[in-house]
Length: 131
Image (tube, rainbow, N blue to C red; front, side, top):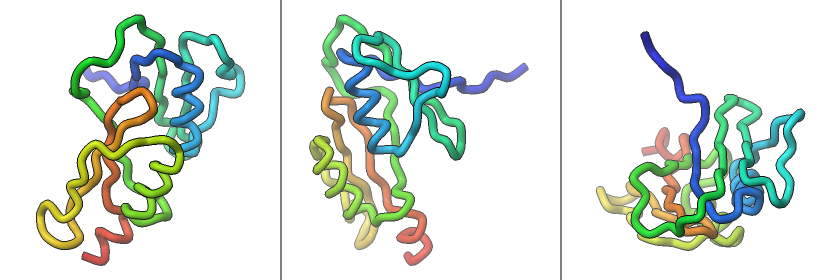
């Protein structure tokens, strides 16, 4: 017997604001019959192409330590470096710049969303194909 991942959950202080931030970053949408609104303690967004879902859940605790689980994002259209610049413009911060860690053209950038949740920006498929 096996299971599948129904959605990825993210604990946060403000489910609506963080879901809106990630929705813009990932170009995800809301469920048509369950829109997210300010004040909602649970906000779900989904990838219209793959159906992947991310659920933001308000919790009373502040984020205190490094995430044990995080997203690795691969740009669909931009390069890794262009994506890092765009994500910083949206309000993310760079936590660790590991570009070139395994030689020229390698590596990733560790970022944090507005609530401090870490995620990584990887090289795009086009950049991988060119290496």
